[in-house]
Amino acid sequence: MTTLAFTKGHGTGNDFVLFTDPDGEVDLTPERVRFLCDRRFGIGADGVIRAVRSRSIPEGAAILETEPEAEWFMDYWNADGTVAEMCGNGVRVYTHYLISEGLVAPERSDTLPLGTRAGVRDVLIGAAGYTVDLGRWRLGKERLVQASGLEVARPGLGIEVGNPHVVTVLADESELEGLNLVAEPTLDPAPADGANAEFVVPAEPFLVNGVAHIRMRVFERGVGETLSCGTGAAASALAFRHWGGDQMPHSWSVAVPGGKLGVRMFATEEGEHVSLSGPAELVYSGTIDLP
Image 1 (cartoon, rainbow, N blue to C red):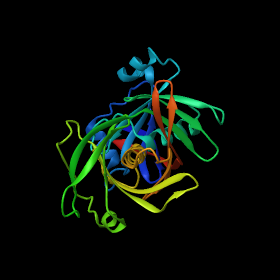
Image 2: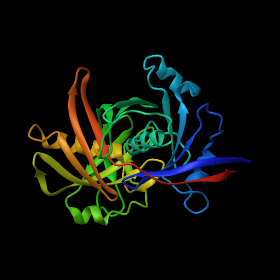
Image 3: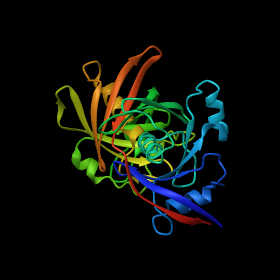
């Protein structure tokens, strides 16, 4: 029997089980991930993050060929036991975990490169939290979205932020609150690998000191409704800006059930990037016997 030392952490209520396995020796199977994430028989979480050195996992070793400074890889698994490209809230919590465990020792205002299945993500360590550069984003396909609580299907916009999203704007707060996201929304046409589904409304007031404010709820692929989704917040802001046109700002505040996240779009030599900022907390540590 394998006894696992773990830490529970969250970013605006999006929670994770984290553990250190530098050499990739733990047999992390879908069944074990589902056990760890089970809120009745396991620890309970939206996902599992294994801290593994990039050289010890094939996806990480490939990254090192072009990004040798990305020593640590974020091996992220959804609660249903499927692997995922990356997670915006998870990257911040993972960074906080690496620092707290003494696995990295960056100075405040330093940038830490981390390997993910979506490529290297650079995280800026600040006084009030962490900011992750999610890299270049891509506009996806339009799809019809049907969710429990909506009388008719609504148009949704595909946004790729390292992982896939479909964002739907609703008429008002009552529609947002009336959604039943216990049931998975239906996307038509269905993406081959699935997608996270975000539902958004503008806040009141919408624009404050040059920052746009929106509210969001999300059904995460492989998890269900979560209190927060970092890449979903970025996708929602990008979709709202796309719909609004050139007069829309590049700084956004996204309110989720678990708190607030900051999103910013900025130009780089390779094209526009989007960043995500917010808190990260470690709640408790313990041990558990893996089945």
